[in-house]
Length: 150
Image 1: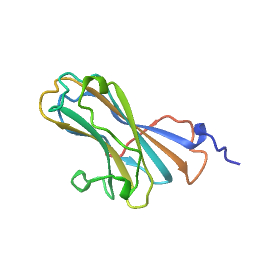
Image 2: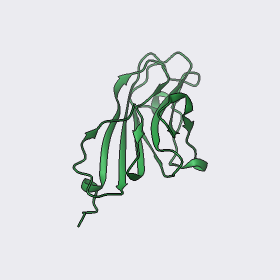
Image 3: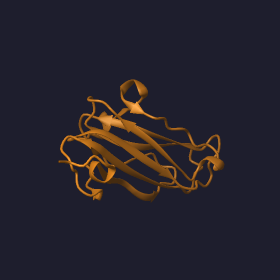
Image 4: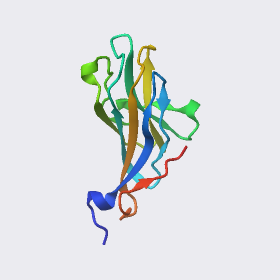
């Protein structure tokens, strides 16, 4: 009989290792949701140098039926996004983790995306972790880093 607890029901996938993006729009690797009915992505943004009202970061989630980046669709509450992401436009708002989830049947692949506005941010470490849960077949095994689809 499968156990229904987080240890046996969650798979953790590194989507973007901690990287200094220096004002560069960046997408994570794709999280393949095949075999799972629920996922979420944690986007962690460190201290940003040069962040202000004209130079800011907007994290978001994107979905895709394939892993072709040009076909990615921004997720919203109307197409399956759970939670909200907020723009970071002041130093008091950085060093934060924001979380969003996806529930839906339209997009098999989900990824995090960091959208930079302006060019004044000269440093900022960003990382992204994906969590898959509600596996169709339990247990999923110990929650270790998996391989993200690229």
